[in-house]
Length: 110
Length: 113
Image 1 (cartoon, one colour):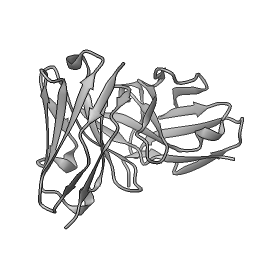
Image 2: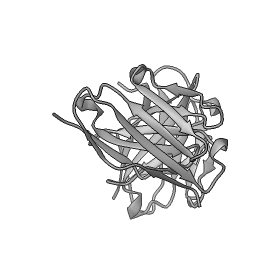
Image 3: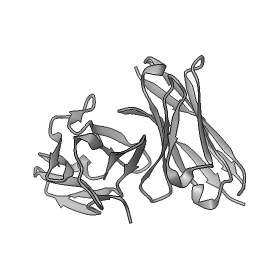
Image 4: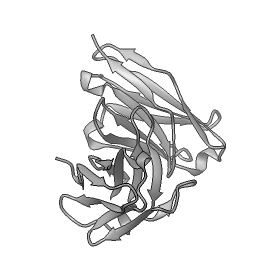
């Protein structure tokens, strides 16, 4: 069982909006967790989307946004496109120099 | 432009060790931490550890404690990751990644007898 939790799978209609979340099995995620988000297509390295909660990496369109929702980090994708159909990972800073990835969310664009 | 170029694929026997290097260019090498992340076939990402190229300090994931070592060579703008006592579950693609946003191309390590 992952300490960092993500939805195993989600789906969104093309053009729609979806929110992926990243939580802790025990405890709350805050900006002090420095949440970051990545997407990955098969056979490729991950690509950074968001870091430090809500900072978009260079070249990432503004339809990707990061936030804290309640006690979880969130990645919201608006205007979903066909090539958003891939895997998404979050990572959290656990303190003491330690980071942990979530198990990933498989996003399907219908 | 920022680039992280990793060494090539490796095939190792169980119990052996592997060294993967990651050469950085396009930025000030000592200004950014470098992380190591691996991905077993069909699995998710696993954070292994990170190194501060400025002073060489490291932190590692607890489950790899004692088997992983990270070093840096500032003159060559290169960080290296050593993993010892390899087992079949160490078969994975290994990535270096510069905080917060650039990734190497990945290095496949296959552990097989």
